Image (cartoon, rainbow, N blue to C red):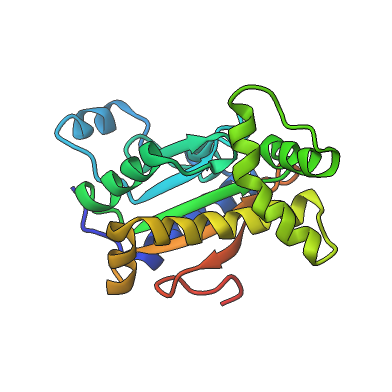
Length: 209
């Protein structure tokens, strides 16, 4: 297995992969027979990717990664629950990943459902209601600033997810405090394929550095 990357190196690797995807110069790395045989003995992904379950936001594709490169956790609206926390902690504690990426995206159905529920007072049916409820604090925050657009709510929800993850997981929080782990909150544009940084922890340079 390769040496452990720093949080910044892990993020730089994903940035480079996304640039290849955007430009149409994808390499489709680590997808051959040799890679499959290497992974028989274990995995050492470079990042946990916690994103939305939307079929248009396939993490390995948009970051041009291959088998064993990403430990992917996905729920509608990247909603955190106990199973999600356990999965992310598995990546941090047992797989020793240096990076967590929380990935929201343009035209998120969970965001749209929460905005609609806030505006109409009508909640979605079934367990979709639970998803909308967890996004609604970001809707309320956006409304308080007079900018409750889907893009603004989505961005606030990514930041809130990052904050909630650090708040609820001691394993994640301690790794961040030690500088062993970086967290990037980002949003994916469906129209051009770009993943843009919204928030980072100190181990990662800011979006414009």
